[in-house]
Amino acid sequence: MESKDWWKKSVVYQIYPKSFNDSNGDGIGDIQGIIEKLDYLKKLGVDVIWLSPVYDSPQDDNGYDIRDYYAIFEQYGTMSDFDELLTEMHKRGLKLVMDLVVNHTSDEHAWFVESRSSKDNPYRDYYFWRDAAETNNWGSIFGGPAWEKDEETGQYYLHLFSKKQPDLNWDNSAVREDVYKMMRFWLDKGIDGFRMDVINFISKNAAFPDGPVAEGDQYGDAGSDFCNGPHIHDYLHEMNQAVTSRYDVMTVGEMPGASTEDAVKYTDPDRQEVDMIFTFEHMNLDCHGDNKWDLKPLYLPDLKANFAEWQSALDEKGWNSLYWNNHDQPRIVSRFGNDSEAYRVLSAKMLATCLHFMKGTPYIYQGEEIGMTNIRFEDLNDYRDIELLNMYRDNKALGWSHERLMEAIYTKGRDNARTPYQWDDSANAGFTSGEPWLRVNPNYQTLNCKQALADPDSVFYYYQKLIALRKEKEIMTTGRFALLLPDDETIFAYERVTANEKLVVLCNFSDKEQQYQPEMVTAGTLLMHNLPAPEIGILRPYEAVVYEIQQ
Ligand code: GLC
Ligand code: CA
Image (cartoon, rainbow, N blue to C red; front, side, top):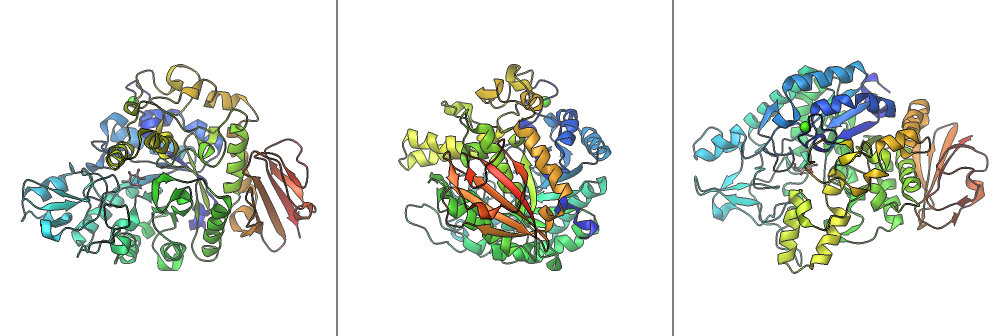
C-alpha cells in the first residue's frame, strides 16, 4: 500500500456542526464547540474528521446551500476560528475533510445574483436558464418541479434540490475553473480532502429531454440525464488532474444512483477520478423503489447480497466506503437494530461489528458511537428539515393520511440524525445553555456521552476497540471478503481472507437465539464479541462474534 493511500487504513468521523456542540449558548453548534471536543474524538481513535458545510449560507438546507465558498457561516465562527480548528486537529494527528457542495450554490451566491439579473450577464451561463418550452418534466428532490420561473427575465432555472439551490452549469469551463480555484484555496490552507456532495449529478444532458413518468408519479425519471451524466467522468478526471492529485488528500464522492459498475469507474486509481464513493443502494432496501418514504421492512438477505456485491466489485480495483449513518439517514440502531432498552446497546455493537470488519474505509456519524436513536416528535412544528416538511405537504396533497406521513417521518426523516449531540444528562443534553435549534431527543438523561465514558461496557468503548483493531490487524484492510450463509434470514455472516489467515464474522440481526454450524469457527480464537462468554454454534439475540483462524 502506498503511503498516499493512508485513507485505506483510516476511520472517518462525520461532524454535523449545527448539532454537535454549542460553545456560546445561541442554540447552534459552532467551530469553537468542535475544538472543545477534539480530545474526545482523539480518545475514540478516529483519524479523519469530515465536517459538513461550515461556509457562509442562508441555511435553507443547513449549509448545503452556499452563499460564499470563501467565508465561514457567521453563527459557526470566523475564518480564524476555522484556522484554529485545523491547527488544533493537526496538532493531535487528526485530518480534516471538508464538504464540497458544487452541484449547486445558494440563490444568494454572487454568481447567481449576477446570473439572474439579465440574459446577457457574463454569469448567465453559470446556471441553466431556459424558456418555458425548453424546460422538462423533472421534479425537485425536495418536492415540486425542478424548474422555477424567475420574474426578472421570465426564464426558468434548474434546481434539483430546493428553489434556493440553483444547479451550476458544469459544461461552462469558467464554472469549473472557479470551482477548482476555490478548492485550491482550502487545500492550500492544509485541509486533507473533500467529501463531494451529490457529485455524480454535475453533468446534465443540456437538451433536457422529458423522462418517463412512473405510475402514481408526477415527475419524469431523469435516468442518466443528470445522474452519472454524459461528461461526469471527464469532469471528475479533470478535477483530479487540475487539483486533488496535486495534494496528498482523500476524496469521497456522494453518489446516489451509482451502481457497482459505475463505482469501479469512479474509484479505479488508474482512471484518476476519486478515491471512493458513497453508495445509496444499501440505504434503499427498506423502501419501495427509490422512494424513501414508501416504507417496507428490510429483508436481511437483500442487505447481505448488496454488501457482498459491493465488496467483490471493488475488491481489486477501487475502494469502498462503509457507512450506516450520516446526516441524511435515520439512526441505524433504530433502523436495522433494536432501540428498546433491552437491546439498544447490544444491537448497536452488533451493527458496528458487522460494518467495521468489512473491506473499505468506515465512517462514523456523530452520536453513532454512543448508540443515539431516532426521535418521534408528534408535533410537526418540532421538525426543521426542508425535505421532510415539503414531503409532508406534497404527500398530504396526494392523499396520504397524517398517520402514514408521521410514520414515514419517524422512520426516515433526516432530523432523526440531526437532533443535538447528547453530551450529558444536564439540560438540553449539555449541547447548549440556550434554546437548541432542534429539540433534543428526550432520552438524553440515560443515553449520553458522559454515561458512555463512565461505563466500560458502553457502545463507545466497543467502537474504540474496533478502531484500534483496524490499526493492528492488517487483514481488516486487505483481506478478501466472502459472504457466508447468503440465504439465512437472521444471521449476517462473512469472512475476510488472506493467504495465511481468516476472520469469521457472525452477527445476529434478530431478537431470537439462532444457531450456526460450529465447524465454521472451531479452529479459531475469539477476537471480538459483544456479550460475555459466547458459545460456539449459538448466537443469542443481537449477538456478534468474530473468530480469527490461522490457516
Ligand atoms: C446531499 C447532502 C444533503 C443535501 C443534498 C443537497 O445529499 O448530503 O444533506 O440536502 O445533498 O445538497
Ligand atoms: Ca453557537
